View 1 (cartoon, rainbow, N blue to C red):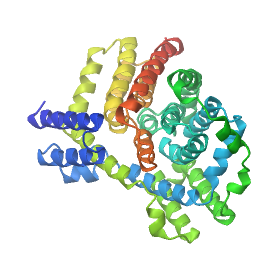
View 2 (tube, helix red, strand yellow):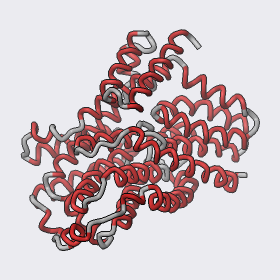
View 3 (cartoon, one colour):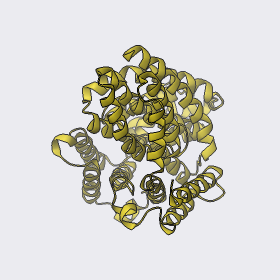
View 4 (cartoon, one colour):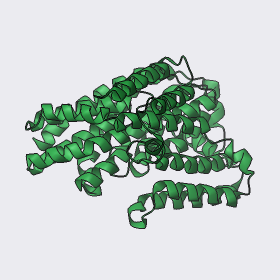
Length: 428
């Protein structure tokens, strides 16, 4: 590797240590790391700000802004409180059944939406539930974001890496549902069992608080019926456009921004007040992280790692499959899985072509499962993770890097391990 590549690795490693230890706020670390990458020449302004492969992913940034505006307006209607009370009542006020309901809602929604949109909608409901029941919010939020990453793996549109893989491989929506759907259902069942064990200390409840919530009437939580109806119409239109984006030829980011701004105008709310609810710190963190990871892509670090791994098992389909699942999970836990998959896709395409058999498509599924599930391993492994940490911090329920990661590593190791025999049984 070049000197710049080694310097880029050093900068990223130092930044990662600071993010993990939280000695410095993660936003300051991300911005400092981005500036360092520019100063050492590991990237430049053109690649950092305008490159789709090695710069800030503006589609993600503007998707987040648009959905955060919609959520900020919805928060003023009382919808989240309504859903929270409904969930608690359906679960009889018992903490673990409450978690099961929220996890299943998140996983199912993530299969049809992007993960970030789902957690933006579910997190406010969770915070309200935990506040009213006197429960710690962190275990519930962590469980939901992991469920979003698992559920999003089921479909072509559920996770951005899947979209990249589909475009490179020619695999269809039905292909994803057919191959990824069954294993995701198994993983969700296993994950619910893991939740009962991992978060067991969070399931102690206060009978008086449960009774108080059970006595509440959901309908009374709705504060502005008119605004609720307008918001739901815009939300439905945005979600519908997400699902039809390939036919409409509109990027999800454009749909989200247009929907968010139009809803803000129709709501007649004070734009300054609504803008205060946007997670600006999270957006800035993403920008810095994208530049740092983009520098690793631009200097060829990620490409060389991927190339070396695949060359080691070339011609050995099962060995390549296992290595690809494991390596993708590890690297996606450390860097954003979007640039990783974008870098890895051409290499996998060459391996599939060299194999020359329909069975070779197993490598695409190995890449998808490793990248999607590896995002659960650390607090910055997936976009949804970072968003939830930002929401929790803003609500005064800060989740540390290691609080998330100590659970994430367990979930990732177990779920990825289950995928390996599944791929063997399905393709070999």
